[in-house]
Image 1 (cartoon, rainbow, N blue to C red):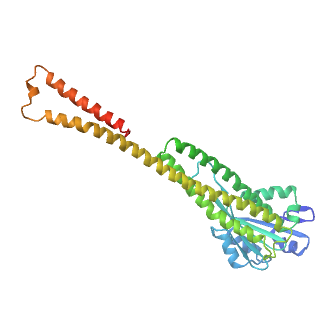
Image 2: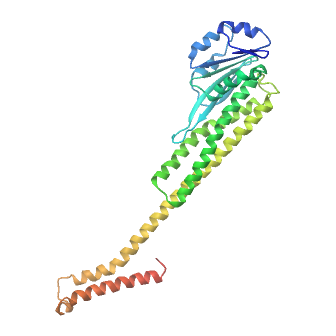
Image 3: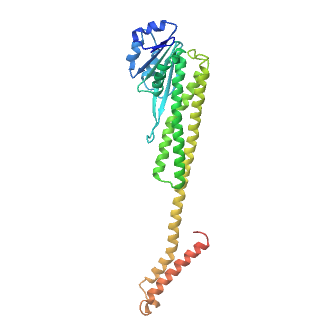
Length: 317
């Protein structure tokens, strides 16, 4: 679509050259999973660097910015992490920006692009003020989408921490490891994307006008906040893993303590039973009735209770 003055109008690709020849026209071309064919259709008017086209069509999995003098290539990523998903869904958005045009390429629908298309129909000045202004809007929406993920992560961490202090289970460990893997995937994107947006705020790229850079610095500040929070969540997860290991170790120690106490109490009882079970003459065997058995059982009970009392008095229980 193109903007002339305050009018927004769609156009066929055959009129692209005519539009770009008009100094008052600003053009946005959105390509969704067109592959190389989409860029070949633009070749008669827009000649992008072959490396830029290759980066658009293939997944580079890392945000970056490249300057090709007459146009600027930018790769950024949107994120979505629904409740219950093991990993966040990361989608790459490739952007080519020139003096009077903006080209976006993505393989699947992206919220930033969809939102920009929706707003542009009501506010054509979003593109009329320049392609870099529309670029700022798309980046701003993408960063906004990271904030609900960060808030959900904080709630999940608080819930895990509360449950961890009650009991440490294998299911809880699996949840901690799931969060750890998901945040690692986010951090691999957020850090480079923060640096990429920071590069746009400098004066080295002619495609970004000075009046747009303060707005991009605001986007960078919020992206830095997301990055800092992810770093703090990583440290918090590491602490939770240590607490889990401590909880499991303490529980194992308690079990071993109980088993040891039972063994210590039973050992003298077992010794008495072994002595009276030997196959030789004992004086108690001459006692009438079951008096001998009663004596042996009473002796074992007395020794067991005495051992327990000694352990209790020594504060080993």
